[in-house]
Amino acid sequence: MSKTEQMKQLREFAAEIRLETLRILKSHGRGHLGGSMSIADAFAVLYGAIMKVDPKNPQWEERDWCVLSKGHAGPVMYATLGVMGYFNKSDAYTLNHADSAFPSHTDHLRTTGVELTTGSLGQGISEAVGAALAMKLQKKDNRVYVIVGDGEADEGEVWEAAQFAAHYHLDHLIALVDNNGRQLDGSTEEIMSHAKGIGAKFDAFGWNVIDVKDGNDVEEIYDALSAAKEHTGSPSVLILHTVKGKGVEFAEKSGAHSSTLSAEGWDEEIQKAEARLQKLQSGEDA
Image (cartoon, rainbow, N blue to C red; front, side):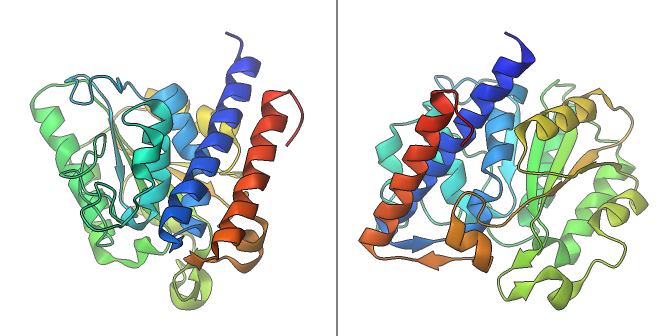
């Protein structure tokens, strides 16, 4: 398969992930739309091209791990896993219902394909670092990918994990920062700026930093992840400059962290997402 064809498939995959994310959120009527949509492209590249996974054998010993440290974006992970075939897609249409296997924040005890329980900000990257160290000590070839929010990076625990990972030269660990510029209460710049930038902070802690100018472009993400896999001696981090709510017009404009819509409102957004996917599948520019 040519790279052009591969990128086309990844764009279609990302569009399908966005569509399924909307369907999942509709089932609950509300949820973390903005931060789910901003990383749909990263999930498409990870699961569609980069990671070693087997949906029919979720506990395959040689699999790569993906940890969603910003666990509130669980809907986009459930959408990805459903499209991949870890479970029936419609199973996730019980988001946050009583006794559902799909809580609003990811829980590995409840959802097939979720490696580690996350949600308390900073917890996920710390767990991912621990898992990566365990794999290194066991001399395994598995890689660990962890997705961190830019607002989440306000937490000191993130930087304790970063220091630890660099000290132990965990070069099979790759972090992706969803640098969408927004968090719960407003912009990251207003609430807690990162001065010279998150990338500069990771660099100071000894990480290999790769800046991805368009973090919603599957080809840029793919190239950056491919380069990170080749790097040795230290962990790598991709700074993905993304748009919060990408693919949903009202969410892009508002930078909405969590959204509540009527059933009709969700249906309208689902219809738009279906149309975008159909255009991509027919070879049109969506």
